Image (cartoon, rainbow, N blue to C red; front, side, top):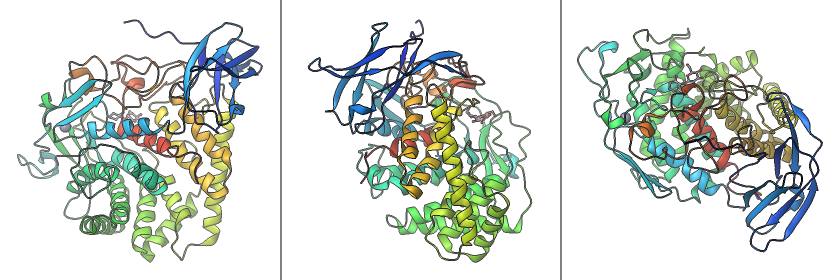
Length: 532
Ligand code: 9MR
Ligand code: ZN
């Protein structure tokens, strides 16, 4: 099938929230535009396109069609019409616009479950696989040749089926922050995730599926294995047809630190629902934090035998995050001392961050903590740096022809970063009440859902012209033409125009849990708008 033609009007194909900024990007045109309500045909707004401006990263002349002045029109379908070309595109306005996308992106996590049969439905199609990887995993590389450990469960990482602790950290840490920031709104969405744990809210039940696997990755001494992986990336087959032997890969300090942080978070978050599980997570966090204290030097995983995802980056950010979460959970003075020492060395909140650098998660926990005992000068410094980072993100968005909060930076998985920047923006909004920050979260969502060079949604099964051929073994390995739904693809790399909707193109069109976790946060932040 031919690739969808890129429209000249590029907007959020999921739609716009009433009472919030609304704008599209229009290529190579000037003059007026109109907004028409579809149910009665009324023209509800007429405006001027902004003067065309060269967009640095795509080389296009772009105008903005800003129709924020529509305010709070009735929910429904509308059309943007550009006078010069007569081109028109449909979009929706509704205050509950992001409920279904949020549900879909969270369901996508369930569809990533390993070690169990999986079934989901979307747009009349069924997506399913039988139990997979039921004998995870061989212990040959961790001193017990020929034996297997109890490492079934968890989520597959991405378009591949391996399971990596460091990337779990980037995902779970961000999803837990979504729960902490937007829990009540999330609880009001009927997620329909498999009820493996009935007494938990669905969102936490989904996360527990990953946490239970993570707990199996902790060794007796408190160190944490780096990953469960086959030696190479296998063929594009369904997970229940994948028979490559899978191994536990030896420990790393980064995995141990990320594990500590996640378990410490879980101890707090699950306490109201499942005291026993929360206590077990707390105990796991404590043991791994003690291990880290006893092994302060960086230790990389011995993974030369594996060609799969390395997820190998310096561990100081992971250790900072671990100290932050363990202190927040326990009040441990030694953890606070370590945390403040690390913050003093690297106090800046980052604008652009992914699994390689989870420091922001720790800085946010420190900043928003209600515990006593923090060094107030450090708190002020982190706050200042948070606002500086958020201001830079806002400025990048304003300078960009598609209002992209990551500006002109493109790399493997940058769509995930665009979504992940919403944590920094939301935090700045909470510190100041300044709407510019949460409006920039919408800019990010607009971009990912169609206000981009391709005029396409980057999330499978969502919005207009979504990816049809993601690099995903599950989608490639089944007989359904549509891809598995709710997945954010990695995005243009290394330049703004370099994305192709081809299954082979894992460098721009793969899917991954850390990108979806970030998307889930961004969507959760807009579930109820405007917030009370
Ligand atoms: O997201 C990862 C990106 O930052 C790296 O540049 C890239 C190459 O190492 O790997 C990406 O992660 C992939 C992982 O290594 C294996 N599973 C699929 C991940 C998404 O492409
Ligand atoms: Zn599996």
